[in-house]
Length: 310
Length: 162
Image 1 (cartoon, chains in turn brown, yellow):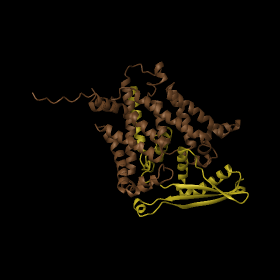
Image 2: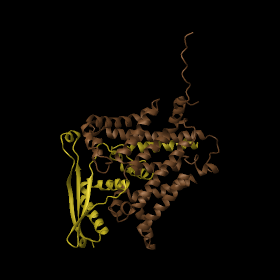
Image 3: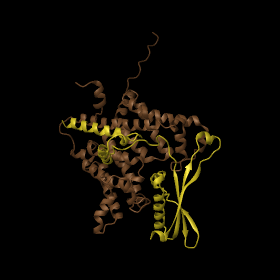
Image 4: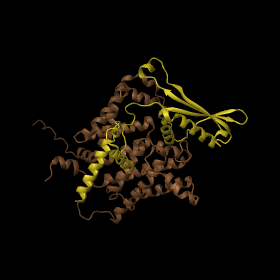
Protein backbone atom coordinates (compact mmCIF):
# COMPACT_ATOMS: atom_id res chain seq x y z
CA UNK A 1 0.00 0.00 0.00
CA UNK A 2 1.59 3.21 -1.14
CA UNK A 3 1.28 6.37 0.88
CA UNK A 4 -0.81 9.27 -0.45
CA UNK A 5 2.37 11.39 -0.67
CA UNK A 6 4.04 8.80 -2.88
CA UNK A 7 0.92 8.56 -4.99
CA UNK A 8 0.96 12.32 -5.40
CA UNK A 9 4.53 12.20 -6.63
CA UNK A 10 4.48 9.13 -8.85
CA UNK A 11 0.96 8.03 -9.65
CA UNK A 12 -0.75 11.24 -10.57
CA UNK A 13 -0.35 11.29 -14.36
CA UNK A 14 -3.23 9.29 -15.76
CA UNK A 15 -2.35 9.31 -19.44
CA UNK A 16 0.52 9.59 -21.87
CA UNK A 17 -0.76 12.88 -23.27
CA UNK A 18 1.81 14.98 -21.32
CA UNK A 19 4.56 12.89 -22.89
CA UNK A 20 2.98 13.36 -26.33
CA UNK A 21 3.01 17.12 -25.75
CA UNK A 22 6.65 16.79 -24.74
CA UNK A 23 7.53 14.86 -27.90
CA UNK A 24 5.65 17.09 -30.31
CA UNK A 25 6.82 20.29 -28.62
CA UNK A 26 10.50 19.33 -28.58
CA UNK A 27 10.28 18.16 -32.20
CA UNK A 28 8.59 21.40 -33.31
CA UNK A 29 11.32 23.49 -31.66
CA UNK A 30 14.03 21.30 -33.17
CA UNK A 31 12.48 21.87 -36.60
CA UNK A 32 12.44 25.63 -36.02
CA UNK A 33 16.10 25.40 -35.01
CA UNK A 34 17.01 23.32 -38.05
CA UNK A 35 15.46 25.94 -40.30
CA UNK A 36 17.82 28.57 -38.82
CA UNK A 37 20.84 26.27 -38.93
CA UNK A 38 20.10 25.33 -42.54
CA UNK A 39 19.63 28.90 -43.72
CA UNK A 40 22.73 30.21 -41.97
CA UNK A 41 24.89 27.08 -42.05
CA UNK A 42 27.77 29.01 -43.64
CA UNK A 43 27.90 31.20 -40.55
CA UNK A 44 26.83 28.81 -37.79
CA UNK A 45 28.00 25.35 -38.87
CA UNK A 46 30.72 25.65 -41.49
CA UNK A 47 34.16 24.12 -41.03
CA UNK A 48 35.66 27.49 -42.01
CA UNK A 49 33.08 29.69 -40.26
CA UNK A 50 33.88 32.64 -37.99
CA UNK A 51 35.32 30.14 -35.51
CA UNK A 52 36.65 27.21 -37.56
CA UNK A 53 36.28 23.66 -36.32
CA UNK A 54 40.04 23.37 -35.84
CA UNK A 55 39.71 25.96 -33.08
CA UNK A 56 36.31 25.12 -31.61
CA UNK A 57 37.14 21.39 -31.45
CA UNK A 58 39.98 22.17 -29.05
CA UNK A 59 37.43 23.22 -26.46
CA UNK A 60 35.68 19.83 -26.59
CA UNK A 61 36.45 16.44 -25.10
CA UNK A 62 37.79 14.18 -27.90
CA UNK A 63 35.23 11.51 -26.97
CA UNK A 64 32.29 13.74 -27.90
CA UNK A 65 30.92 13.22 -31.42
CA UNK A 66 31.73 15.90 -33.94
CA UNK A 67 31.33 16.47 -37.63
CA UNK A 68 35.07 16.93 -38.08
CA UNK A 69 35.53 13.20 -37.40
CA UNK A 70 32.97 12.30 -40.07
CA UNK A 71 34.54 14.77 -42.48
CA UNK A 72 37.97 13.24 -41.90
CA UNK A 73 36.62 9.74 -42.57
CA UNK A 74 34.87 10.78 -45.77
CA UNK A 75 37.52 13.16 -47.13
CA UNK A 76 39.35 10.36 -49.03
CA UNK A 77 36.11 9.80 -50.96
CA UNK A 78 35.94 13.43 -52.03
CA UNK A 79 33.15 14.38 -49.60
CA UNK A 80 33.50 17.96 -48.38
CA UNK A 81 32.71 19.22 -44.90
CA UNK A 82 29.88 21.29 -46.40
CA UNK A 83 28.32 18.11 -47.80
CA UNK A 84 28.65 16.44 -44.39
CA UNK A 85 26.89 19.36 -42.68
CA UNK A 86 24.13 19.31 -45.29
CA UNK A 87 23.69 15.54 -44.96
CA UNK A 88 23.48 15.67 -41.17
CA UNK A 89 21.01 18.55 -41.24
CA UNK A 90 18.88 16.59 -43.72
CA UNK A 91 19.02 13.36 -41.69
CA UNK A 92 18.25 15.27 -38.51
CA UNK A 93 15.25 16.93 -40.14
CA UNK A 94 13.84 13.59 -41.32
CA UNK A 95 14.34 12.02 -37.89
CA UNK A 96 12.67 14.96 -36.13
CA UNK A 97 9.70 14.91 -38.52
CA UNK A 98 9.22 11.19 -37.78
CA UNK A 99 9.55 11.91 -34.07
CA UNK A 100 6.89 14.62 -34.28
CA UNK A 101 4.58 12.26 -36.15
CA UNK A 102 5.29 9.47 -33.69
CA UNK A 103 6.25 7.03 -36.43
CA UNK A 104 8.61 4.34 -35.10
CA UNK A 105 9.01 6.83 -32.29
CA UNK A 106 11.87 5.32 -30.37
CA UNK A 107 13.98 4.75 -33.49
CA UNK A 108 13.17 8.28 -34.66
CA UNK A 109 14.20 9.69 -31.27
CA UNK A 110 17.49 7.79 -31.35
CA UNK A 111 18.17 9.01 -34.91
CA UNK A 112 17.27 12.61 -33.96
CA UNK A 113 19.58 12.43 -30.93
CA UNK A 114 22.42 10.79 -32.88
CA UNK A 115 22.30 13.45 -35.60
CA UNK A 116 21.78 16.33 -33.16
CA UNK A 117 24.92 15.57 -31.13
CA UNK A 118 27.50 16.12 -33.91
CA UNK A 119 25.58 19.15 -35.20
CA UNK A 120 25.54 20.64 -31.72
CA UNK A 121 29.22 20.04 -31.11
CA UNK A 122 30.21 21.29 -34.57
CA UNK A 123 28.65 24.63 -33.66
CA UNK A 124 28.83 24.43 -29.89
CA UNK A 125 30.05 28.01 -29.54
CA UNK A 126 26.85 29.20 -31.25
CA UNK A 127 24.42 27.25 -29.04
CA UNK A 128 23.35 29.26 -26.05
CA UNK A 129 21.22 27.65 -23.30
CA UNK A 130 18.86 26.12 -25.84
CA UNK A 131 21.47 23.57 -26.95
CA UNK A 132 21.52 21.83 -23.60
CA UNK A 133 17.77 21.99 -23.06
CA UNK A 134 17.06 20.37 -26.45
CA UNK A 135 19.63 17.67 -25.75
CA UNK A 136 17.89 16.92 -22.46
CA UNK A 137 14.59 16.75 -24.32
CA UNK A 138 15.91 14.39 -26.98
CA UNK A 139 17.57 12.16 -24.41
CA UNK A 140 14.28 11.71 -22.58
CA UNK A 141 12.46 11.11 -25.88
CA UNK A 142 14.67 8.03 -26.34
CA UNK A 143 13.72 6.45 -23.03
CA UNK A 144 10.30 7.76 -22.02
CA UNK A 145 7.14 6.38 -23.65
CA UNK A 146 6.55 9.56 -25.65
CA UNK A 147 4.95 7.80 -28.62
CA UNK A 148 1.92 6.21 -26.97
CA UNK A 149 -0.50 9.08 -27.59
CA UNK A 150 -1.14 11.34 -30.55
CA UNK A 151 1.22 9.32 -32.70
CA UNK A 152 1.12 7.06 -35.73
CA UNK A 153 2.53 4.33 -33.50
CA UNK A 154 -0.42 4.54 -31.13
CA UNK A 155 -2.78 3.85 -34.03
CA UNK A 156 -0.76 0.78 -34.91
CA UNK A 157 -0.32 -0.10 -31.24
CA UNK A 158 3.37 -0.78 -31.83
CA UNK A 159 4.61 0.58 -28.54
CA UNK A 160 1.62 -0.01 -26.33
CA UNK A 161 2.52 -1.84 -23.18
CA UNK A 162 1.26 -5.36 -22.92
CA UNK A 163 1.14 -5.58 -19.15
CA UNK A 164 -1.80 -3.26 -18.73
CA UNK A 165 -0.05 -1.13 -16.12
CA UNK A 166 0.46 1.91 -18.29
CA UNK A 167 -0.52 4.45 -15.68
CA UNK A 168 2.59 3.76 -13.65
CA UNK A 169 4.85 4.23 -16.68
CA UNK A 170 3.22 7.53 -17.49
CA UNK A 171 3.41 8.69 -13.89
CA UNK A 172 7.01 7.67 -13.40
CA UNK A 173 8.02 9.30 -16.68
CA UNK A 174 6.26 12.54 -15.85
CA UNK A 175 7.80 12.43 -12.37
CA UNK A 176 11.28 12.33 -13.95
CA UNK A 177 10.43 15.42 -15.99
CA UNK A 178 9.07 17.15 -12.90
CA UNK A 179 12.17 16.47 -10.84
CA UNK A 180 14.41 17.62 -13.69
CA UNK A 181 12.40 20.86 -13.97
CA UNK A 182 12.85 21.39 -10.24
CA UNK A 183 16.63 20.97 -10.68
CA UNK A 184 16.60 23.48 -13.56
CA UNK A 185 14.72 26.15 -11.62
CA UNK A 186 16.53 25.60 -8.33
CA UNK A 187 19.94 25.86 -10.04
CA UNK A 188 18.87 28.92 -12.02
CA UNK A 189 17.47 30.56 -8.89
CA UNK A 190 20.50 29.81 -6.72
CA UNK A 191 22.91 30.98 -9.42
CA UNK A 192 21.03 34.27 -9.71
CA UNK A 193 20.61 34.76 -5.98
CA UNK A 194 24.39 35.01 -5.41
CA UNK A 195 24.69 37.91 -7.86
CA UNK A 196 24.21 41.50 -6.68
CA UNK A 197 22.62 42.50 -9.99
CA UNK A 198 19.63 40.26 -9.23
CA UNK A 199 18.86 42.06 -5.97
CA UNK A 200 19.44 45.62 -7.24
CA UNK A 201 17.44 45.31 -10.47
CA UNK A 202 20.54 45.83 -12.62
CA UNK A 203 20.39 42.33 -14.14
CA UNK A 204 17.22 43.05 -16.13
CA UNK A 205 18.37 46.61 -16.84
CA UNK A 206 21.61 45.25 -18.32
CA UNK A 207 19.82 42.54 -20.32
CA UNK A 208 17.40 45.11 -21.75
CA UNK A 209 20.38 47.37 -22.61
CA UNK A 210 22.26 44.75 -24.62
CA UNK A 211 21.70 45.13 -28.38
CA UNK A 212 21.52 41.34 -28.83
CA UNK A 213 18.35 41.24 -26.73
CA UNK A 214 16.76 44.59 -27.58
CA UNK A 215 13.28 44.21 -29.02
CA UNK A 216 12.00 47.64 -27.99
CA UNK A 217 13.58 50.87 -26.81
CA UNK A 218 13.17 50.52 -23.05
CA UNK A 219 15.97 52.92 -22.10
CA UNK A 220 13.54 55.11 -20.15
CA UNK A 221 12.74 52.25 -17.78
CA UNK A 222 15.75 53.24 -15.65
CA UNK A 223 13.46 55.97 -14.33
CA UNK A 224 11.53 53.20 -12.53
CA UNK A 225 14.19 51.40 -10.45
CA UNK A 226 11.62 49.80 -8.17
CA UNK A 227 9.94 48.15 -11.15
CA UNK A 228 13.29 46.71 -12.28
CA UNK A 229 14.12 45.59 -8.77
CA UNK A 230 10.72 43.95 -8.31
CA UNK A 231 11.17 42.15 -11.63
CA UNK A 232 14.62 40.75 -10.78
CA UNK A 233 13.74 39.79 -7.21
CA UNK A 234 10.49 38.29 -8.48
CA UNK A 235 12.35 36.20 -11.06
CA UNK A 236 14.72 34.86 -8.39
CA UNK A 237 11.88 34.09 -5.98
CA UNK A 238 9.83 32.28 -8.64
CA UNK A 239 12.80 30.10 -9.57
CA UNK A 240 13.80 29.30 -6.00
CA UNK A 241 10.22 28.68 -4.89
CA UNK A 242 9.30 26.54 -7.91
CA UNK A 243 10.89 23.26 -6.69
CA UNK A 244 9.04 23.59 -3.39
CA UNK A 245 5.66 24.95 -4.39
CA UNK A 246 5.03 22.54 -7.28
CA UNK A 247 4.53 19.81 -4.64
CA UNK A 248 1.93 21.86 -2.77
CA UNK A 249 -1.58 23.13 -3.54
CA UNK A 250 0.14 26.28 -4.91
CA UNK A 251 1.39 24.28 -7.91
CA UNK A 252 -0.87 26.05 -10.40
CA UNK A 253 0.21 29.47 -9.18
CA UNK A 254 3.96 28.84 -9.35
CA UNK A 255 3.81 27.10 -12.73
CA UNK A 256 1.73 29.98 -14.07
CA UNK A 257 4.32 32.48 -12.80
CA UNK A 258 7.12 30.42 -14.37
CA UNK A 259 5.29 30.36 -17.70
CA UNK A 260 4.71 34.12 -17.52
CA UNK A 261 8.42 34.56 -16.85
CA UNK A 262 9.23 32.69 -20.06
CA UNK A 263 6.67 34.63 -22.07
CA UNK A 264 8.28 37.84 -20.80
CA UNK A 265 11.75 36.55 -21.74
CA UNK A 266 10.48 35.75 -25.25
CA UNK A 267 8.75 39.09 -25.80
CA UNK A 268 11.26 41.40 -24.11
CA UNK A 269 14.53 39.63 -24.96
CA UNK A 270 13.58 37.87 -28.20
CA UNK A 271 14.56 34.43 -26.90
CA UNK A 272 11.58 32.74 -28.52
CA UNK A 273 12.98 29.25 -29.06
CA UNK A 274 14.49 29.03 -25.59
CA UNK A 275 11.28 30.23 -23.98
CA UNK A 276 9.31 27.76 -26.07
CA UNK A 277 11.44 24.87 -24.77
CA UNK A 278 10.84 25.91 -21.18
CA UNK A 279 7.11 26.34 -21.74
CA UNK A 280 6.87 22.90 -23.38
CA UNK A 281 8.78 21.29 -20.51
CA UNK A 282 6.48 22.92 -17.96
CA UNK A 283 3.36 21.90 -19.84
CA UNK A 284 4.61 18.32 -20.14
CA UNK A 285 5.58 18.14 -16.49
CA UNK A 286 2.60 19.86 -14.90
CA UNK A 287 0.07 20.62 -17.65
CA UNK A 288 -2.16 17.61 -17.05
CA UNK A 289 -2.22 18.26 -13.33
CA UNK A 290 -3.13 21.89 -13.89
CA UNK A 291 -5.77 20.94 -16.44
CA UNK A 292 -7.38 18.59 -13.91
CA UNK A 293 -7.33 21.31 -11.28
CA UNK A 294 -8.93 23.71 -13.77
CA UNK A 295 -11.62 21.16 -14.59
CA UNK A 296 -12.31 20.55 -10.89
CA UNK A 297 -12.59 24.29 -10.40
CA UNK A 298 -14.94 24.86 -13.36
CA UNK A 299 -17.09 21.78 -12.54
CA UNK A 300 -17.23 22.46 -8.84
CA UNK A 301 -20.71 22.36 -7.38
CA UNK A 302 -22.22 25.83 -7.35
CA UNK A 303 -22.53 27.35 -3.90
CA UNK A 304 -25.75 26.55 -2.14
CA UNK A 305 -28.18 29.51 -2.17
CA UNK A 306 -28.76 31.09 1.16
CA UNK A 307 -32.13 30.20 2.63
CA UNK A 308 -34.66 32.90 1.83
CA UNK A 309 -37.03 34.47 4.30
CA UNK A 310 -39.71 32.04 5.28
CA UNK B 1 11.66 -5.13 -12.14
CA UNK B 2 11.83 -3.05 -15.33
CA UNK B 3 10.28 -0.10 -13.52
CA UNK B 4 12.68 -0.40 -10.60
CA UNK B 5 15.62 -0.39 -12.99
CA UNK B 6 14.17 2.61 -14.79
CA UNK B 7 13.63 4.43 -11.50
CA UNK B 8 17.17 3.68 -10.33
CA UNK B 9 18.71 4.80 -13.63
CA UNK B 10 16.58 7.94 -13.62
CA UNK B 11 17.63 8.72 -10.05
CA UNK B 12 21.34 8.42 -10.92
CA UNK B 13 20.85 10.55 -14.03
CA UNK B 14 19.03 13.25 -12.06
CA UNK B 15 21.72 13.29 -9.35
CA UNK B 16 24.37 13.90 -12.04
CA UNK B 17 22.19 16.61 -13.58
CA UNK B 18 21.84 18.27 -10.18
CA UNK B 19 25.62 18.14 -9.57
CA UNK B 20 26.38 20.08 -12.77
CA UNK B 21 23.35 22.36 -12.68
CA UNK B 22 24.50 25.50 -10.88
CA UNK B 23 27.17 28.12 -11.56
CA UNK B 24 29.47 26.31 -9.07
CA UNK B 25 32.14 24.36 -10.96
CA UNK B 26 31.66 20.97 -9.33
CA UNK B 27 34.47 19.62 -11.49
CA UNK B 28 36.90 21.56 -9.29
CA UNK B 29 35.86 19.48 -6.28
CA UNK B 30 35.84 15.92 -7.64
CA UNK B 31 38.72 13.75 -8.85
CA UNK B 32 39.49 13.94 -12.57
CA UNK B 33 39.03 10.18 -12.87
CA UNK B 34 35.37 10.63 -11.96
CA UNK B 35 34.83 14.07 -13.41
CA UNK B 36 35.74 13.27 -17.00
CA UNK B 37 33.41 10.26 -17.39
CA UNK B 38 30.63 12.34 -15.84
CA UNK B 39 31.34 15.22 -18.23
CA UNK B 40 31.29 12.86 -21.21
CA UNK B 41 28.08 11.25 -19.98
CA UNK B 42 26.64 14.73 -19.58
CA UNK B 43 27.81 15.67 -23.06
CA UNK B 44 25.76 12.83 -24.55
CA UNK B 45 22.69 13.22 -22.34
CA UNK B 46 22.50 16.89 -21.38
CA UNK B 47 23.11 15.99 -17.74
CA UNK B 48 26.14 18.31 -17.60
CA UNK B 49 24.08 21.35 -18.58
CA UNK B 50 24.44 24.39 -16.35
CA UNK B 51 21.31 26.42 -15.75
CA UNK B 52 23.05 29.66 -14.78
CA UNK B 53 21.32 31.68 -17.49
CA UNK B 54 22.14 35.39 -16.94
CA UNK B 55 23.70 34.39 -13.60
CA UNK B 56 25.24 35.32 -11.34
CA UNK B 57 25.63 38.49 -13.45
CA UNK B 58 24.53 39.61 -16.90
CA UNK B 59 27.73 40.02 -18.95
CA UNK B 60 28.34 42.71 -21.50
CA UNK B 61 28.30 42.13 -25.24
CA UNK B 62 31.10 42.47 -27.79
CA UNK B 63 30.45 44.28 -31.08
CA UNK B 64 32.61 43.06 -33.93
CA UNK B 65 33.04 45.15 -37.05
CA UNK B 66 35.18 44.55 -40.11
CA UNK B 67 36.69 47.54 -41.90
CA UNK B 68 37.56 46.30 -45.38
CA UNK B 69 40.33 48.03 -47.31
CA UNK B 70 39.45 47.81 -51.00
CA UNK B 71 41.72 47.89 -54.04
CA UNK B 72 40.76 51.46 -54.96
CA UNK B 73 41.89 52.70 -51.57
CA UNK B 74 38.41 53.12 -50.13
CA UNK B 75 37.10 51.39 -47.02
CA UNK B 76 33.81 49.70 -46.20
CA UNK B 77 32.54 48.60 -42.79
CA UNK B 78 30.62 45.32 -42.55
CA UNK B 79 29.43 43.04 -39.77
CA UNK B 80 27.97 39.55 -39.51
CA UNK B 81 24.43 40.52 -38.52
CA UNK B 82 21.68 38.65 -40.36
CA UNK B 83 17.98 39.49 -40.78
CA UNK B 84 17.18 36.57 -38.45
CA UNK B 85 17.02 37.22 -34.69
CA UNK B 86 17.75 33.63 -33.71
CA UNK B 87 20.84 33.48 -35.94
CA UNK B 88 22.02 36.79 -34.46
CA UNK B 89 21.59 35.40 -30.94
CA UNK B 90 23.85 32.51 -31.84
CA UNK B 91 26.45 34.78 -33.45
CA UNK B 92 26.38 37.01 -30.36
CA UNK B 93 26.95 33.92 -28.22
CA UNK B 94 30.01 33.05 -30.30
CA UNK B 95 31.34 36.62 -30.12
CA UNK B 96 30.94 36.38 -26.34
CA UNK B 97 33.98 34.09 -26.41
CA UNK B 98 35.96 37.34 -26.65
CA UNK B 99 35.48 37.75 -22.90
CA UNK B 100 38.17 35.07 -22.50
CA UNK B 101 41.19 37.38 -22.64
CA UNK B 102 43.67 34.63 -23.50
CA UNK B 103 41.75 33.80 -26.69
CA UNK B 104 41.53 37.36 -28.00
CA UNK B 105 44.55 37.40 -30.36
CA UNK B 106 43.50 34.08 -31.90
CA UNK B 107 39.90 35.20 -32.30
CA UNK B 108 40.86 38.52 -33.90
CA UNK B 109 42.98 36.76 -36.50
CA UNK B 110 40.39 34.03 -37.08
CA UNK B 111 37.63 36.58 -37.66
CA UNK B 112 39.92 38.58 -39.98
CA UNK B 113 40.64 35.49 -42.08
CA UNK B 114 36.90 34.74 -42.25
CA UNK B 115 36.17 38.29 -43.44
CA UNK B 116 38.88 38.19 -46.11
CA UNK B 117 37.62 34.80 -47.32
CA UNK B 118 34.08 36.10 -47.69
CA UNK B 119 35.06 39.46 -49.18
CA UNK B 120 37.46 38.71 -52.05
CA UNK B 121 37.32 42.39 -53.05
CA UNK B 122 39.18 43.36 -49.84
CA UNK B 123 42.96 43.68 -49.79
CA UNK B 124 43.08 43.90 -46.02
CA UNK B 125 40.70 43.96 -43.10
CA UNK B 126 40.78 45.64 -39.73
CA UNK B 127 38.81 43.76 -37.11
CA UNK B 128 37.44 46.12 -34.51
CA UNK B 129 35.97 44.82 -31.25
CA UNK B 130 34.13 47.00 -28.76
CA UNK B 131 32.51 46.07 -25.44
CA UNK B 132 29.37 47.83 -24.27
CA UNK B 133 29.90 49.71 -21.02
CA UNK B 134 26.46 49.66 -19.42
CA UNK B 135 25.82 52.13 -16.61
CA UNK B 136 24.07 50.99 -13.46
CA UNK B 137 20.45 52.02 -13.01
CA UNK B 138 21.57 54.80 -10.66
CA UNK B 139 24.14 56.08 -13.18
CA UNK B 140 21.57 55.94 -15.99
CA UNK B 141 19.14 58.00 -13.91
CA UNK B 142 21.90 60.60 -13.61
CA UNK B 143 22.20 60.76 -17.38
CA UNK B 144 25.02 58.36 -18.12
CA UNK B 145 24.43 56.45 -21.36
CA UNK B 146 25.76 53.09 -22.46
CA UNK B 147 28.90 53.47 -24.57
CA UNK B 148 31.01 51.18 -26.73
CA UNK B 149 34.57 50.90 -25.46
CA UNK B 150 37.30 49.57 -27.73
CA UNK B 151 38.56 46.16 -26.58
CA UNK B 152 40.79 45.15 -29.45
CA UNK B 153 41.70 45.62 -33.08
CA UNK B 154 43.86 43.78 -35.59
CA UNK B 155 44.69 44.40 -39.22
CA UNK B 156 45.41 41.46 -41.49
CA UNK B 157 46.49 41.78 -45.14
CA UNK B 158 45.41 39.25 -47.72
CA UNK B 159 49.02 38.33 -48.56
CA UNK B 160 49.51 37.32 -44.93
CA UNK B 161 46.95 34.51 -45.15
CA UNK B 162 47.57 33.08 -48.60
